[in-house]
Length: 249
Image (tube, rainbow, N blue to C red; front, side, top):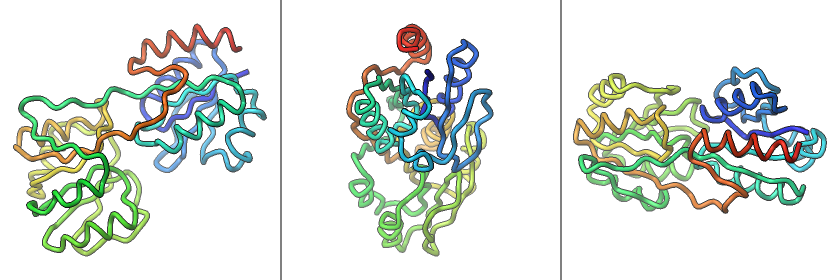
């Protein structure tokens, strides 16, 4: 019987290593789009279709519990994990790092989705998108703002073609403050678009935007059905899973 960690995040790697070191049989799953994780436990890359789906994988590998440590915006994967765990009658736990909180010195505008945010780009001329991959429809909508120059920063090449006024920046975090400040100054960025990912790996851009008095258009996290147990603290997650896993192992 083993613990299946759905990862692809720095926190997922940390938890996989922690449980492996504490003698919990761990399988660590990643999409494998950016890079392969350097962990000592068993790794599954490329999703679960190759096994016939997540439910079949749970049965084949005698998974006793699922720990969802995917990106806070991976709502579809989190929902799939909840559904598969329920069907297989095993617990599904979730760790999502705390969301960022604006300080009094920040100039954030919050939006529930991309389409709601898009019209608010109109007053700006040089936009930095740091909100992950954009869909074809989103890129088409951005291209309508023909007076704007924009940059899209992602870890992997965009899945869809970019308009002439949008450039791609390939970059993989973590990012430090000096580099983020230099990037925004180099391109004379006047607005930053971000998801509220939380954590330290990509928070430096917010500090740089604050110091340059650049507004941040922040996409709020999607609502996800509650898991059987949820954590924002790595320590709390580690303690809970170690205790509970001894019961299901």
